[in-house]
Image (cartoon, rainbow, N blue to C red; front, side, top):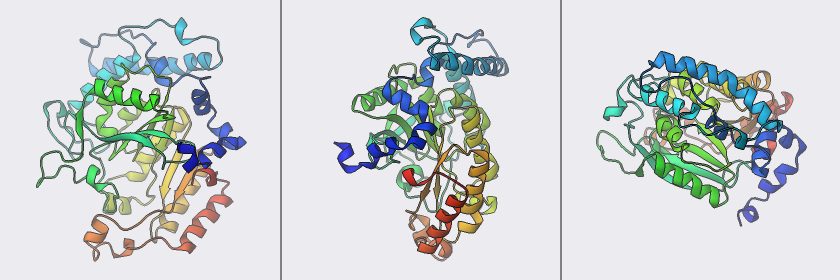
Length: 378
């Protein structure tokens, strides 16, 4: 059994503070609460998916997004049940799906905003066309204690180009100019993805964990898969969190739990190491939206990097303490040189080592000083 190898996954729920911060997630696990996407599927739309412009669809989305928390409060307070809400052929979920497909034709799922027509197979920075590639799907027992066993679905492709990526075989080198054919997964449509989700649930997953690479380029398939899924299970967004504002809005009513990376504070370093612009502003915006307008149940991952504690770790911790005080933070000490760091050691000399004990001590001391709740998940 999985808990023989991870007793902390059981013991963590004895912690009253964990129960308080992740109350709704625990409620879904216990069957006392319903996953958010199930409510989205019961909300009727008042627009034409075929005839209305994208602007008109977004206006209807905004209306339903305002209605959603009111219905959710009634559902959480047992004032209504899902069975009392009739199913509709065209629901809030289908609206989200249609908007996602429209975005795909001028792709801006992430803030790189390539603007290409992926519905015709065009490829941008992520190198993912219209088709979704699933690299693997399994019960993961190596995630944070509150999450295991996690039903992880790894997607090929990524919106980042991290020089230190430890999953570069599925994030970056699964398809290159020299290797144009897919080498790390299988093509998966919405129905097949939903079968993977359902199978993981039946095997005992506590959540469906959309990860990668990065899940963002596959948002159209992920949303469409939920039409076929009926399980009352937590949906978890495990991402670099560089998705566009539009993509984030599509996710807010669907995800029950957020597992965002917050890698860097200094934008110049983010550009140098991961090839992205305006990193801090975009990622912090999306995390704040998940915290305030989404489920609110957030667990930030921060990977400590050599020589970057003062420049990145400390200000990120200070931001978390101020802006998302109820979130937990996983301080990760497992950085090791990989990918381009070891292929081009002269270029990345400063990052070609593990973090030092004194760097870990400085980070954890600061987290404690700020009152950040990190130990049960780090």
